[in-house]
Amino acid sequence: MRDPVEQFVGAWQLVLWTTHRADGTEIFPFGRDALGQILYSADGHMSCHLMMANRPPLGAPSIYDVDDATLGQAIRAYSGYFGRYSVDAQAGIVTHHVDGAWYPDWIGSIQPRRFRFEGDRLFLEAEVGADLIRIKWRRKG
Image 1 (cartoon, rainbow, N blue to C red):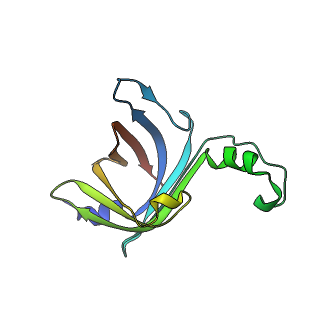
Image 2 (image 1 turned 45 degrees about the vertical axis):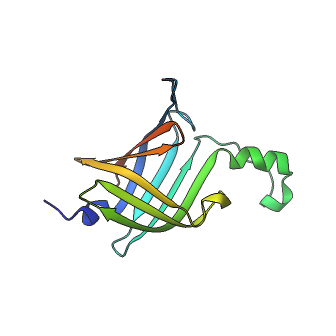
């Protein structure tokens, strides 16, 4: 069997992001057609970006030319962070150690995810409050 860290290394494309609520409902935070990519490097760094598909342009040359309300709506349709990662193969946990993020409260946080691999797929799960988040990725290239 391959070293679990080696299995992570590379680029992964989002297949589906689903949030399962405590009341049994299932939601797709950025829609069923959300776009995303997660990267894991061999030296222990990672980066993750998720967004709604077809986000409309804001019609300004920079974010400094957009009013706060409009920019706020655009930011709610995007998520991204980067940092280091570690793998506990025995427990089936990959932990993202967040160094920087679009959402400032995540900076410095530790984000554990249960993982499993099936062929060219990577499945990550995390509990956030009472919600269960499941994200399915497909290896790129």
